[in-house]
Length: 360
Image (cartoon, rainbow, N blue to C red):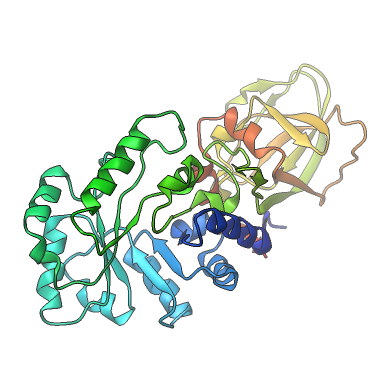
């Protein structure tokens, strides 16, 4: 028996359409890291059906995989990592769009464009994230030497918001004003700024293209359902795992590695077939409390590689047996689970391992 991740492609389509509507019909989709663990090719296919044709990925290998599946010109695939030596033929062969993050990458692209046509590129300006993108000095140089952009067809000037989930943070407006001011020097190039959090900041942040990622899955960093201006997005996943053993254990017995929990009474314990090798991390032991239906039980011992143990002694209405599947992660418990741990939803979703059976 295998733990199973059930993914609703219809819910993902609903979420993207909602984000796209608020973005004035200009939403792309960030589906890097295997579409945040949900399955890149399946998610991309659903989003194509929903009307999305512009995708952002982390690296060139992800881009190759997506292009091999969807090899037609109406799908645009942009690569965040940039443009490196040796990438030239690959970008051309798979019709990928490089995000240019430095003057060095720009020079490299320019040199290649003189020999081969690169259809499009995106210029990334660092307005305060201090991760990727041209810094202030490089941007100033570019403004003074605009001609070095002339050989390339630019799809967008982009930047990335560092504090978008904090509506009151002044850096949001500072970054917005910076990218708009810089873009005035390049009036013929469209602007892309807002991630999921940026969309929620308001339409002034949406500009010419938005790039929702976590919003495709209906939640914010903390597992809370996204309320997109009175439209509640949907968590499209349910993670279920099998009960692989139920046993009676005496009071005073120690549980799991290190014996960190000691039973204070005779108990009924259920071992659940999912562990940190599947992405259900030790950090997810949520104050020891776990929900099955409307009833509460307790995780005892550490979450281990392949399993964890539940004390089901106090369950009254729900009767469990070996071979039953229980819901480990769903819309009703994800926020509580994350709030009592030290991880965010991005980690939880992207770390769901290949051992999980994915059902769509």
